Image: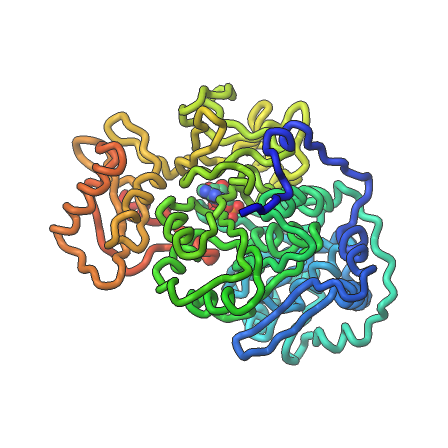
Length: 543
Ligand SMILES: Nc1ncnc2c1ncn2[C@@H]1O[C@H](COP(=O)(O)OP(=O)(O)OP(=O)(O)O)[C@@H](O)[C@H]1O
């Protein structure tokens, strides 16, 4: 109540917003070092499962990143070289990203869950020159190192490993005097592999401007951050969401990060930390909130929490409702891709509509179009696209690196195509329907899986579900739901019928799942997204 937001009037900001992009920009020099002018400004508050707590200021981060930039240079890393950064939420991750940016190397983060085969795929594809990782991944990497001759520098944190440089040693030896590279706003800065929800991961390359400046809107308007905030983003450092919400977004605004370093996500422990530490803003995947609301939330209070957001997957209205009842906070959805900054969001000043992704981000001309590139009328489903002519928006990636054909195929006429389907309502709110490939065609109808999944999860027996098409002799295809049951429920024919009736009641009856299978788990990407493609292939006998 009485909260003033960074964006007071959506229409006014959207209309007047313009980015100013300088010829040269370097986030380490232009942002981190500016905050570092204040000796005690907090950059991160880090805790681990063993009770260890570390607080780091921007000044400390600035100094260490200079030492590491010198050390990397000594190791033979040059501006433009790719540095694979495969860590958990270790403090070194933030230090290394800053060091790479400072020296003009291209940092390529990845999750520690990558297998030896994944590591080889990435090192080869990116022609990485250096890898910074932990001892477990170092061992995995050693098993394929011979096949990755481009990697000349190997650096390990936490413990020494034979044949690897030890991070602490090289940082201690590095000088803290380093001239920050004068990087062009068009140069490559950060390289992310996409989640691989639909196929093999793609390498999306961002410049020193597209993410580092483009995430201004993500941090200031959607995360609504200020200098006195303590922001917690519960996401693995290997995915673009970390750059959005654990690096550029918050640090543009001068907020401090809260970081919980842990081997596995435990909803109860996370809720306990959220209650114990003065976290003001929270960002998590919808899956995280889905797990939260299955806990007994009445056990906790969150005295400092003022703003919650989710992104990465569709956010079911049911979850927003349950979280709001428990905490008073409305989860504000945000939509975007590895390839982009926030494209649209339920910005805090907008009246929320549960189940909608909100309105386009300032600086992004986002719309819903038909197959010919024409904007479709409100309440008509189409492709979500970004207008790129006459102006290409800043927050869009430069390219799929080394894949010019693939890059070209993402653009059509004046548009960049996201590959997602949605409709806009009469007031310009976007409503997600599904990924283009996930939309189900049955008896002449088009059905988005998200709406059916959201209807299912409103039933108390359903913890999570995934909806895909399944072959049917008469109809060609029908809707099929894979359902994980909430504790205490047993799957049987009676429940199947009950769930079908429930969906018929809460959504248009033709959308109800004619087939339902109860499962213990759903196939997911390592980042936790449901891989409907796998279920669909299984159904259609292509697995
Ligand atoms: N708020 C949201 N609501 C619905 N879907 C979302 C939302 N945010 C992101 N998404 C989905 O996630 C996609 C972006 O995810 P990401 O860039 O991690 O790669 P991916 O598409 O999952 O993987 P790949 O491109 O490798 O198949 C979007 O295109 C959209 O389908």
